[in-house]
Image 1 (tube, one colour):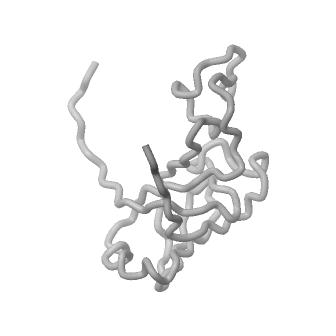
Image 2 (cartoon, rainbow, N blue to C red):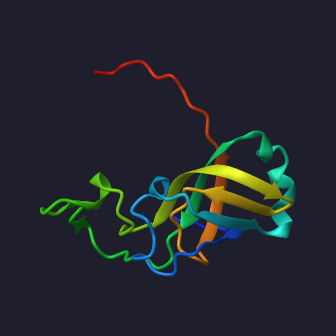
Length: 135
């Protein structure tokens, strides 16, 4: 199966290494800038109607050859698919962010944990749903 991902932009943040980045973006109030490439500018039409967005990005500096890690705050190894660790065969980052400002193809956002220079893969609006109690 052949797959191709096309970056639609780039993320600029103050996080240069994984040690600089928060464990999860929601633990930080720092702002980052997402620049969407000009050829995708039309895709941003109406985006400013949303306060919260889902950002998908490529964790280009993540390890891709491990299937077990020790999760944050734990002592035993677990399979990566039961964790949010960036180590995975396809290191796709997922962040719920708050849109602070938007100027043409520049999005100023909070809660993003991506490293500086990370390729942007997609942007989706987030809507809070009232889900039934499943307990």
